[in-house]
Amino acid sequence: MSEQSVQQTEEAVDVSTGEPLIEVNDLKTYYGEGGLVDDNPVKAVDGVSFTIERGETLGLVGESGCGKTTLGRTLIQLEEATAGEVLFDGTDITQLSGTELKNWRRNSQMVFQDPESSLNDRMTVGEIIREPLDVHDWKTPQERRARVRELLDVVGLQPEHYYRYPHQFSGGQRQRIGIARALAVDPDFIVADEPVSALDVSVQAQIINLLEDLQEEFGLTFLFIAHDLSVVRHISDRVAVMYLGEIVEVADTDELFADPKHPYTQALLSAIPEPDPRADTEDRIILEGDVPSPIDPPSGCHFRTRCPQVIPPEGMDVEQDAYRQVMDYRGRVEDRAINLESVREEADDRSGAPTQEATAADGGRRDTAAFHDVLWERLFAVEPTGRPRQVVEESFDHLADGDWEAAESLLAEEFESVCERVDPVLQEEAHPSACHLYDQPN
Image (cartoon, rainbow, N blue to C red; front, side, top):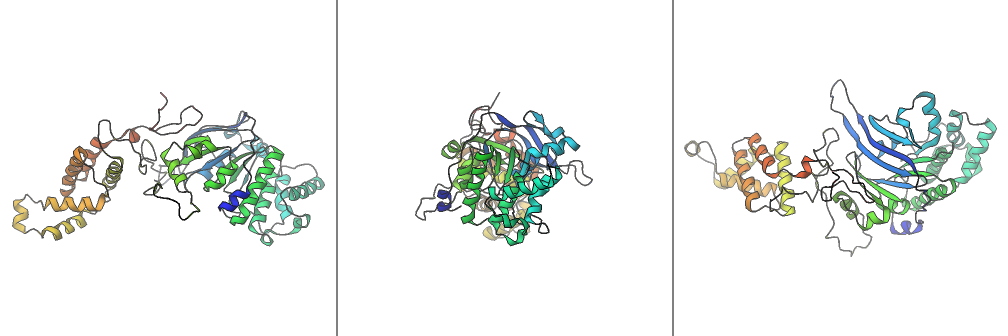
């Protein structure tokens, strides 16, 4: 959202009661488990726990592919949980099925990201909004039609829109239709999955204000999924940050934006666009690399492969920038992602290709110094010093011999961090962060 649009939105209205409506305990949603081809599942949601108070808006943020939408769909049983529990007013809805599940669905609904694809173009607006009422056999047909017209008014649409089709409306109007459909059966809980990301900036503030007004009027509880942190800041009471299937930080909105603890949260906030072109952006945190695969997430802290604050081994004196470079180098050795033949060719060009006699006299080894120089230049923007440098040089020798296993073993033995040995968990406090930079529960 632009700065102007953000200013047009009202501050989030806190209508929460302090009473938990949703309690999520060690929730897991895996895909592909026990498949014919690969038994290694995609861990879309991997051991998530949190609560949402009645009347509260909990914002859920994170990069694309981190599991936000799957978590939201699992909370309302559009996806089946692999393990864990979702307590709705004390009832574990993951255990419901058949008629019990159908009856419970009146308590929760979803507003989808794309207001175009989420509406059936073959149905009129009235039919779309009335469909949940028909499914749940709500009162009489006449009362259902009256309810639809009431909802059209509530979301800012006109009575004559009842018989029109979705393609006749703008994106913002289509999202209002989707919101009206979600409200039809008078739910307590709504998952809003990036409800404004597909809309023009000028329309986003209107939809956000509408959601806030509806929350105040009907006492709704929201899980608001978004990647636009400016939107989350203005609509959420609390914010949960998700990375690779796990919640890594939870805090009140103002506190999280003022004092982010987890390095991932700090990077997300650092990436918020600054509208002033003269603003100083030198301190902006740029994350290197892509989000790892949820099929085989990194051991320990899932964020460690990209984290700019990985904790070095105890007693090792190394600057953080240099240690991050060493960790990246380790990853490339483990993945065999260094073209040794290309390195050898460049080393030969620098030192002059060795003669057959010279190579034999050297035990088959080429110019080690040139080989090292090429690796330093290709793989390290910041080089370590002291003992860390000696270890890296020794690993270069193993690579010169083509011995990947020896290089990998040496690097793992010397540079293993607590961040890769132990998976950090959220502390039981007001502003928890799943990070080894902070005290972990015993």
